[in-house]
Image 1 (cartoon, rainbow, N blue to C red):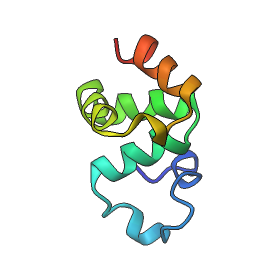
Image 2 (image 1 turned 180 degrees about the horizontal axis):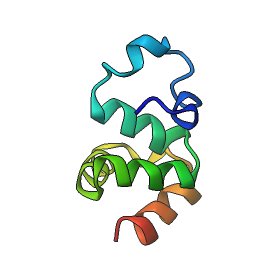
Image 3 (image 1 turned 45 degrees about the vertical axis):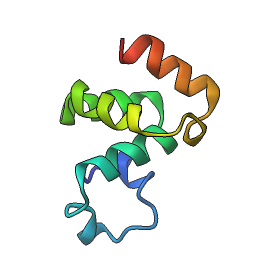
Amino acid sequence: MNTPSVRTVLWDIKPDKAEQLPESFVIQRVLSYGSILLVVETMKKYGIDAVKRVFNAMKPTAISARKYNYIKKYLLS
């Protein structure tokens, strides 16, 4: 997943290295720094179960409270 929208959350990773990143790392970055639209795109690419697994493993403080509650209540329920 090396689209321009994902590049916005992987700003510190060289483009040629982005494809080699673990799935969980990319999902965590998208959840922390990406827009809701990017979260939905990530859910389509990796699956709801993978996103839910990473989301549940993250600390709630890694995501803004408003975004955390929206993802938990509406996207992953």
